[in-house]
Image (tube, rainbow, N blue to C red; front, side, top):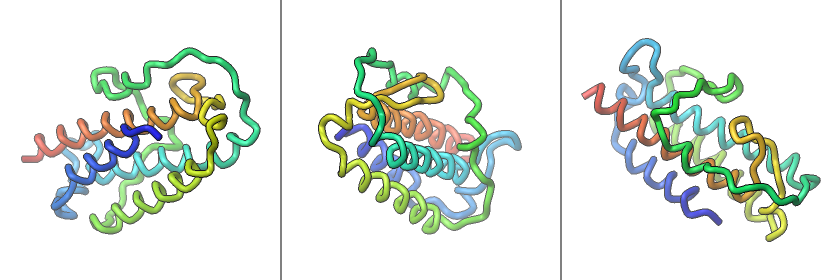
Length: 161
């Protein structure tokens, strides 16, 4: 399985470790996300992937598609508005609860992925940005997307310091 998928999450926890609940929920600017909101968005991305993988992988087609530049998802210069279904909720929640929520969803996602065989990783699923991705590319996308938001968290920390 994709190392970017696991590495990005490790880096994420390293970056937010030790932040106070106040640090997590403070927005640099009114219209910008707080770190808590970034983390909530990442949880929702995992939930979307979890649902997609559970519901669509069994019947998804295996077909040749070109490799999509999912690594470009890391680039924060190209701004995109998050689709409404993955927009973060602004809520007051402590750091431990946020981590538990994210870990719980990621554990479920890893559990589903662990049931896939070699052919499943080649199956093609819809994607809101890249139109369609193989399951393997979807998993890479999640990691690269998380790196994008890791950069955002660093920007937020910089602005707040």
